[in-house]
Image 1 (tube, helix red, strand yellow):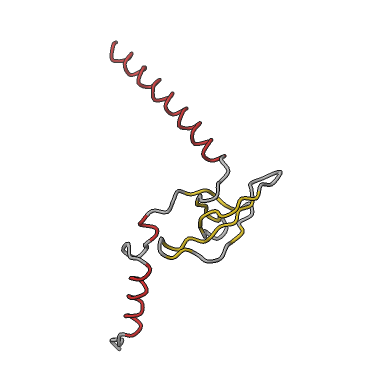
Image 2: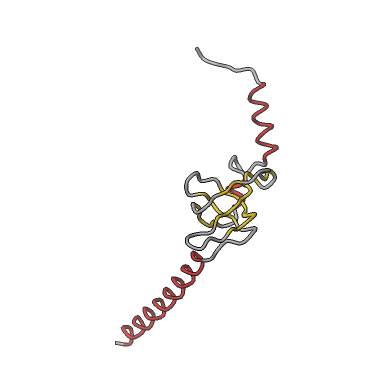
Amino acid sequence: MAKVKELEALVAHYRALLEEAEAALADAKSRDPQVGDFVRSTLTSFYGRVTRVIPRPSGKPWLEITPYLTADLPGTSTLDLYGDWEMIETPSQALEGRVSGSSFADIAAQLAASLTAPEQRNV
């Protein structure tokens, strides 16, 4: 019978942890973004760093972002996302360098080499 009591205590402990995690998740989802946070457009999937937050009396705030291409190639213009956005984590290295973790300069060099190399086709 001691085993049942231990399991009941374990279940109660994990339920309490789950409630805390759900509350933390609700807080994180309801938080308004700050300048410097990353968001993604739910319409186009463009993502970038927030440069301006414009509160609205009802609904989500309007956001202005600088598109984020790679760590060494930030966007130069801004996009307005209005209410169609979601907060995301800071992009990871894997997301920044989509081709084997390469930098933009490496990707450009590979593309230039493939364009200037003679094509070999089997016809």
